[in-house]
Length: 549
Image: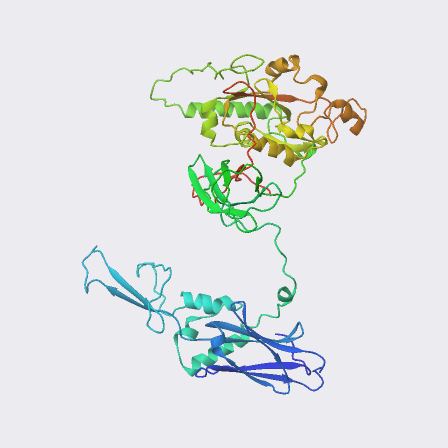
């Protein structure tokens, strides 16, 4: 406790058990009160201000009704402007706890007999209570009954939650209703109820979070007409294929719409369509979907973590190989007949593919079955799901499409993909992502990825990398690259690489006539980012690697 000062103010609260009023007395020593200052008495309960009044030390006694506060701990603070001077804690008990009556379905029970209970809950006025409740059943031989009420809900929420330290036998203060217990409870408030003054967060301006709390999956946006003005009352529809989901909404006065409680899907996409207030097709305007924004994370070449098997000594490599052989032998049932390994040499064939190497000659091949099973709608989500290390990143001074350390060139039916960002001198990462999102996979028959030299050489001979155009960097060629970063033979900035490894992605459509972009003003596509739901796991003899964050 702080030392007592000879000069200052005092706050004295009388809390009689029988009275419905609290008597608050304000005291001050001579010379401690400045007539130019303003003083306030503030009473809070459960973090909510229930009483606030400007006070005058000439009329030092204030009577406050207990009905202004909820049952539990109430805190009174004397303030000089915004500076706290004194604080006093009292306990309010309206005796308004619910009355619970439990009746069994019969007077006696046999061993292992089923027991039926009738539970009746009413408030202090005898009216039924509506709410959500839970019941726990324990064995008296295993769990001792809390006859003193030291661990019940009322003691935990109304008493222990508002006090510092450990309260010995807290049930004693609430289960008895006599003057001696009430005085002991008030003394408890005077000792363990003192917590110091914490009003800084109350008077300081609240800091609004940069990112709103995500209580559920939701999609918001706006519908505008050709004049960029909001369309109110537009009929909205949202759907997804995997899992099947369909719902509707109506735009508000500002043209905004919101879809809430969307299914928790991973790497999925949604189809959004707008209609006029009369349900007709919108021929002009646009459906704008609010995109989720994340803080930028700039990736540097030197910060990349190399795999464990890169630049590893031969001893460690041999150990890993031998360990893999032993594990394979352990999984073999020695009591049966061990069959020889069967290697499947057949490859997937994409019908009508424009692969420069020929049918089935690619490092990765995904046919129409794989594309349908992905459950996505946009090309960006398909590549993120199927192509290892696929991303759009700002690297080497440009925003580009990457697959691990490869720069990526995408072709559709033998022709370069018609991305809008090719006309932008300096496209951003979001520009490239948005163009890939706008391209839908509904007409795709197959996807092939070539990154090894035996497959990429055919694309080099076919002229797909003539002029060494930087993939994903708009129309910027190597000459512009050299002018921007020095004529040093094309050395990558931030790195020591002198050559660019390029991977090629070949997309095949059903028509074979190239890509078709749907330009409907009343249609939009969007996706939800993967959700990660925390689970509890129990395992025995599990060795977990050390992690750093």
